[in-house]
Amino acid sequence: MKLDRLGLIRQRQRGLTLVELMIAIALAGIVTAGITMMVSNVFAASVRTSNHMTAVRQVQHAGKQVSQDVLMAGTVDTKSHFLKLTWTEPVTPDLHEVIYTLVNMPSGEFKRLQLEHYHYIDSILHSTTSTTMAEYIDPDGTGCTPEVDALPKGGILTFTVTANVGGQSETRVYEVKPRPD
Image 1 (spheres, rainbow, N blue to C red):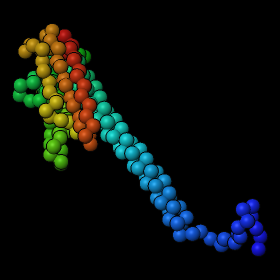
Image 2 (cartoon, rainbow, N blue to C red):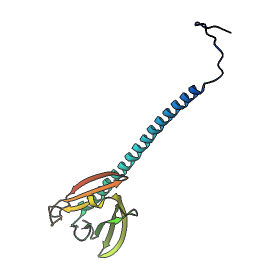
Image 3 (tube, one colour):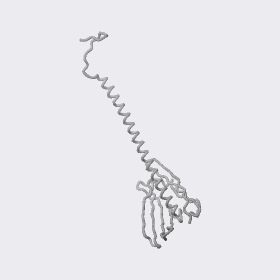
Image 4 (spheres, helix red, strand yellow):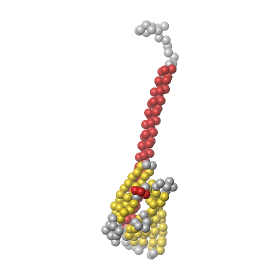
């Protein structure tokens, strides 16, 4: 036997006591819980950011396409449809009719901004295309408002679009002045 400084007999330890083991397990649990919460928060923030970016892309895409079409428009109609635009090509007699509508999505809560493009050559329907321009559109925050009834003669069309993806919302307002006749 070997005596330590205080004169006590020290025996060789061969493992951990039950108290030491319980403390080690508790500390490991606290560290694991903290790491799990941190990873969960990072994942949730990533999902929110992704949803917001999707909403931003939807309103940007809708705004860009509607703005381009309004710039070409010879006539603008917001009474018979969500938005109906017509124009004749400057060089050819080709007539274009573009109709924007809000169509239900499968979830039913939000809408798709649908574009129907009719192309007429010599007053005969030449082609028809249908395209979804944007999804997750909130119909309560989306609309077209002409500044004057005589669009495009001097008026401005205000196009407001709101997209909501996973609780993340984005709204943009586009003011477009159609080309003169």
